[in-house]
Structures are given as structure tokens and as C-alpha cells.
Length: 121
Length: 121
DNA sequence: GTCACTGTATTAAGCGCTTAAGACAATAAT
DNA sequence: ATTATTGTCTTAAGCGCTTAATACAGTGAC
Image 1 (tube, each protein chain N blue to C red):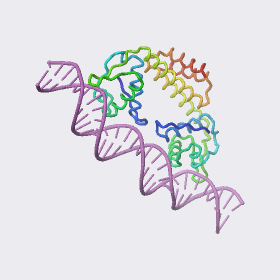
Image 2 (cartoon, rainbow over the protein chains, first blue to last red):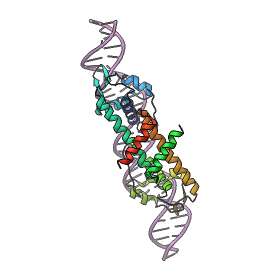
Image 3 (cartoon, protein in one colour):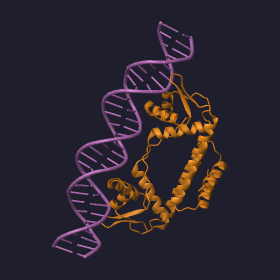
Image 4 (tube, rainbow over the protein chains, first blue to last red):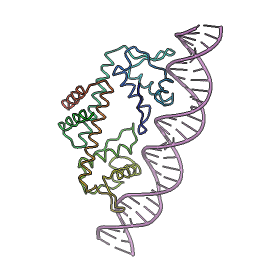
């Protein structure tokens, strides 16, 4: 999986968000075993403690479960994953809308702006 | 102006962003005098030093200018403001699109999601 | 000329995040 | 049975952000 860490926010929060997205999108399939803490930390280029913190938080979201010595696996609950996916997507949409409003854009202008962003890809 | 500060990101960055949006949207009009550092800090509920830091950064964006002892005023350059508004709006759109993609959504699904968010307002 | 207000600078302290290095118990693999 | 791997925990250090409390020079109003 690809990691993208910036310096302007706590690293463990960014790791958490990206892990959430990876599970919610199915990049890590339901029931699939996750790489270990040390392996994930090496991938992301962060300290294992920081990744451990992100994974511990992820667990409170109910998206993964831990078997003490056998690693972590993505939950089997496809319903929970789908629900998380919807919630995360909706939050992003609302954040975009709020940013657009703060800039004085109307809903129509926000929609058109998104269309423009898609066109420019 | 309304301030919205959360605990999960550096305060001065949030202040900077909200000041940028206020100027870009015209909430503070071109040429208008801004409240003083202490006043703005009181409004936002932060330390004057933190607000000062945000304002100093804002200045590097070219949206305000400082007259040492006569306070700060929004730039007269309407072009620069319009340009900043476009750039900020576009960035938000791109961020939303990236988040949607990370969740496995297509462009069409992202657009529909935004429409749903607008409907739910 | 005095006074209040402006942006700016300084020092100190506290806190959270991150890294580093290492240790432990439980378990799977051999 | 031994070995390697698992998640977890601990201690220490460093760094940036934030607050607090002042202080200063320049300027406009009176």
C-alpha cells in the first residue's frame, strides 16, 4: 500500500486515516491479514511506536481485530466496512462543501468546481 | 468573523486558513482594515502570539499588507484575491476527489455523493 | 507633549508527538 | 524443544506548538 505523510499534521492521525481508507475501500480485503506493526512502519517510513498507536486507534473503529500473537486481520463484517466507507465518503463531501461555502461559493458553483477538477485529471 | 478551532491540528495553521478564506471570500473587503492582533486573538480565543504567527504567514501570501503602527489592511489587488479564491477552491475540490478515490469511488460516484450532501443540508 | 494603540520581540514553561532502543509474554513454525 | 515472529510496553530524549507575561518603538489622536 502507498503511504503519504505530510509534516503539518500528527503522523499517527494520517496513518489512521489512510489505514481506514484502505480497509474501507477493500484494498485490504475482509478477513485478510495485515502486515505486522514493524513491517507497516517500515513501509510508511515511521517509527514502529507511531504505527502501533495508529493501529490501536484503528481497532477502536471496529475495522480490524487483533489476535495477540498472530497479527491483525480485517474484520469479516462486510456490513461494517461498507458503512464505514459511506461515512468516510460523506464526511469528505461535507468538508468540501463547507470549504466551498467559506469561500463564498454556492452549491451550484461547488458542483461545477468538482466537475472542473474531474475534467482536469 | 466566526472562528472554528479544533485540537487535532496546529492552531496557527487553522487560523491562517480561515483568514485566507475570509479575505478570499470578501468577508474582509479589499482595502478594509483588519482588527488588531490582540482583538483577533480574543475573538478566536487563542494567544496573541499564535494569532500573530498566523498573520505573519498570511502576509507572505500577499493578501494583506502591514503598516507598522497603523494595523493591517486587506490588499487592494482584487485580481490577487480572486486568484487566491480560485486556487483555494480548486485545492478543496482536488482534495475531495483524492479522498473519494482513496475510498474506491469513481468520479461519477463522487459527483453523486456531493449532490447527496447538498440535498441533505 | 501626552496617551493609547499598533505590530513586533523576548523569555519561560508546559504539553503532545515522534523517534530511539530495548524488553516482555505468547504463539506459530521448524 | 528451540527459534522467530507477534502485539505490547517502557524509558528517554528532542522538537514544535501554545500559552503567558512583558517589553519596546513608532504613530495617530487629543
